[in-house]
Image 1 (spheres, rainbow, N blue to C red):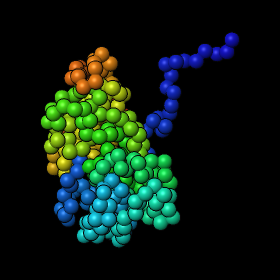
Image 2: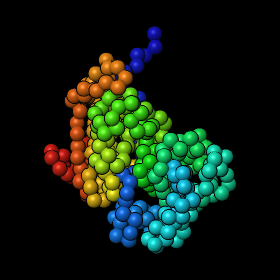
Image 3: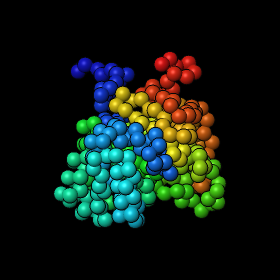
Image 4: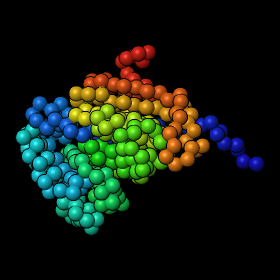
Length: 293
């Protein structure tokens, strides 16, 4: 008989399980776009300050040209060397030489808001999406706002409350959201945006009740997180970030019928203000509570 395997041993190296391969900055939407914007200024600094070359991906917007040109103006006002937007009106455009050139030369990639389903439909499985992944792995910062924030994870919530009940009902309900594949820049993390403003705790709870291995991150408007390769999350902006760890949670998800309210217990909830940090690998805050700096 062959040597028995130790089933308790790790199945992957720490390198393989890193939360991200390069810096990622999801933004909760409605970010300050002026010269005093902490969020966009930090993004520009990571991209090279005055020497930055920003590629804007406005594919989520039905008015992509307007969105693209708007952010070109924003980044030029912030003093970057170059800013241009990637033109993807149909899937074939995402395999074009021009799209790949802009992404390949960028020192920072910015994904705008809009419809995240549109992002998936036009970019999933294309050379442009693979280029974004590779550039991030090479150390290029990737930021996304609103729908662009949700797309950076390995999973994202598709749609907004498809069940036929009152849209103002924020309760967690079975079937409230469906998960689809995202860009995969963040592993084991699911991101939601406009979080407090749109009462989205229920849909985030629904997502991790069905998939308890995921860490839920809810971003308020004009608030972002910078996530780096060492697994550190830093809160930027003016409001708060809600983090929910459901690894040890227990729910009645599989006992409930579609649309019924869920019970979820034994989750860990963290609410972090500007400047606070969080260890995504250990799933605990840094420098507050019982955790040392």
